Image (cartoon, rainbow, N blue to C red; front, side, top):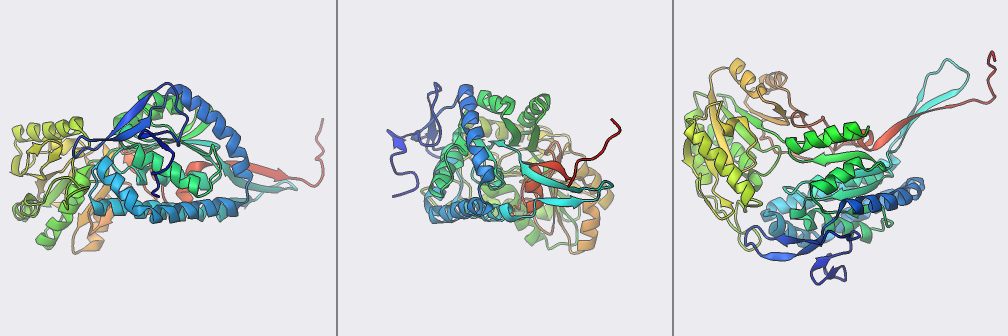
Length: 486
């Protein structure tokens, strides 16, 4: 029996992961075909309050449980993700439009997130402090309590589990709000995985819902930490609301990441690197290569090679066919991408390949000679579009790359890696990859952007996760009562 093939489905409506309120249901739609795959319960703000009450009650016992128990649950979740990998990949292909290799990457990384989180319960959680008084003084890290996780549609498994797993491992309860468009692969899957792994009830609750549910999660008094991944526009609203309610918000937002191609590279190899950075998952990745800044001496050759590499890539249904690019998530995203391409060509960019679509299938598009003032250069595209802009000097490209409100990921291709590292120091960015493209992610590495890309590294790696999902408490111990003047 598969992960989602039991009594939790009632008339193709998932009811096992949360308590359905008066919200009705969402239809799970396959972007490639428009087919209805089933339905998921639609949460309401009232469901958030009820879930928070259950979470508070369950979290106390979970935080007090032996650390070996929390570690075992996280290890079990990682094993179950691997065991059910094929089924989860099917859902990722059908629900999010991911091609099979990208689904494989998501499941593997999600399992690794659980394995890395399994080491957190036994990690040192405090330090002895110097004190001028006759006492023992130390600081310890305690669970924050209830953590709210708001995850997006584009990489639904990784972008949920990278907060869910460490938060649970460190003794918190979690309320997860997946995007309704991927509520199965980004929500129901984890409810089932952790239930099978032995997580006690109430510690992970999945509430698919709209902006009203997200707002309720941020304002709910019992929720002390918010981990949000999504657009910069939505992230600003989440951050402002969290600030009003005096709670921490870890924000991983959009990007307009640059790939700098210096003139000493192998141009053919560089074009391959650039193609992968832009067109993986049809560009629907926050750290996708969004600006190709190429030295003027090789810019034309690079643009031609890039267009040649992607012009024949198969675009289609990733569940039924072997393709390189699947569909965009919905018509709204497709129209936004096409609007950026159209406006940019009207502003002086040239379409070297692509620029067309059939349904939700957008052809891989290369834009040459892209001016710096057109939308495809200035804005996050979130689609399969590679804008190429020439530059003439290192100083100019440093200024170009840095002249963006975003600061998520940066790639620099050069034979002189020392010069590449020195160039990177001039460009604000949370992630830097010398001689690689901008899309990289590992469970062991801190992840996050600066500026409009977010509030820094708040996921990945033991230290970042401990800081994200615990509170620091100062404790002193005296052997005898002190004497005071009155």
